[in-house]
Image 1 (cartoon, helix red, strand yellow):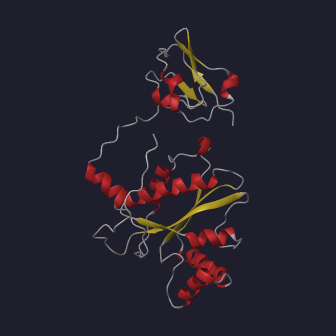
Image 2 (tube, one colour):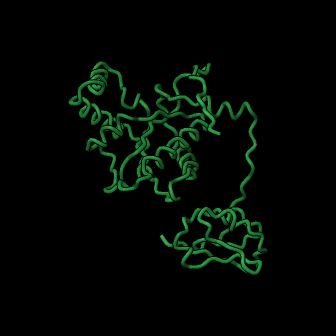
Image 3 (cartoon, one colour):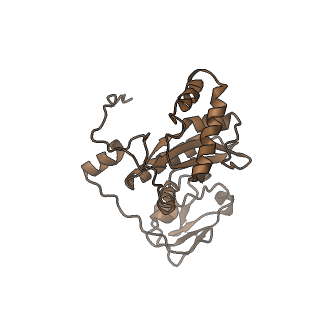
Length: 261
């Protein structure tokens, strides 16, 4: 996509913030004004960092002229920060009351701000919250798993014994997909799904990665989820409200870190 940057010389104060911030080094200051060539704009990723740092509001990217919302500095106590990142759990027991769609959409809108390679913003989502559709997903994965042997066959056996190891009885499933040929698809979808996990947790909901769903989809199993042609599912989360209350933080391995200097 060819991006277009409008620069209002009457507003530009020539501070150079935009030129220093541009990751592609496309902007420059000439005669105390910001300028950019059409040739350089061909390499623009459309990240909008130049707009984000401009103190005078002199830049308009791709003709979108409504005022940008303010970026409010993050303020969290040490306890709040620890709770957000350490308190998230992979939920495997869910209540049956569903997460309202409006809550999910707020969380997905937060995940929309997750970084993507080259600012492609290519991640799209599919949500299933119908009991009938979810039952079809579980049955489809079990059908596929029976013929795989090993770990997968055990998951099918557990299902026969009354244990849903596919979606764990979650009332919702959300998939992140991207262009199948994109070299950044797995990274972009995984990062966005991780942001979604934290967003759901901030609303008192929870999630767990649905790896068996991804495995079945990659094997070509039709789970009735309507994945568009040319797209590849790279992340899948079951989600809902936890059926249990977590009282303690489980132990994790100590931080493993090496500084290279």
